Image (cartoon, rainbow, N blue to C red; front, side):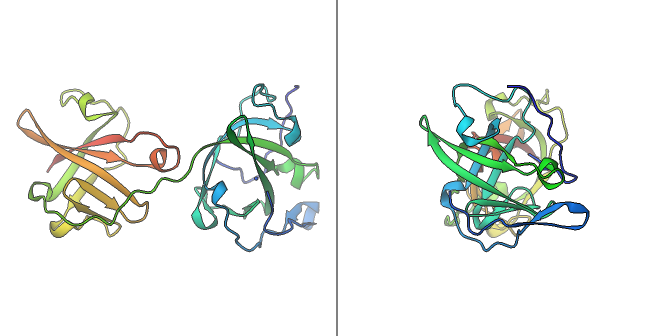
Length: 261
């Protein structure tokens, strides 16, 4: 299949089945198409989770799981659908069967099909070819990677006097066994700078609390284990980092290594 250049809109996506309403389109000033994006929210449990792009086709019927059609790199890498019509991108929202882009004012339909034992989404790609050139949108094909993982966070409080205080991040490792105090594994800046554990299970921020061996995040609804080890006379904490790789993509969490101040 010959590769085809896609004219991207000014506001790009970062990195679809019954519609909740008709995605009626109109023409605004300058003859640019704007869809109706004021659609009521209708839930869709099936769509929630992480979807990774695997192909780009003119029509859903052209997709073959065994043979990729698009020769070039896929611009759209993934879509993550959160509960309540939200996504990881602030400018994208969804209702059953439709994704709304508030910047481009497009309402793109999605269709989910089960093929060869996997779930695939066919997502209308309403780029500038649609809004400016008035061409029929083609489709990204995305494969479901996993649903949204939520941990049990209503855990009873058990005290742990040794954890109380402020801990400063010193490294980020795949597993505690791979930490070496004399040699830093993570080359870049550490996103998590420090953690403050207050008495009675309170955290340094209002959205997290702790009980012995576990930190609970009320927003992400994750329960991350921590362990404290003495290495060479210094206490280090190994803290599970349950980011989107864990909650959306089903990956095993890595660990922040922190040292008590």
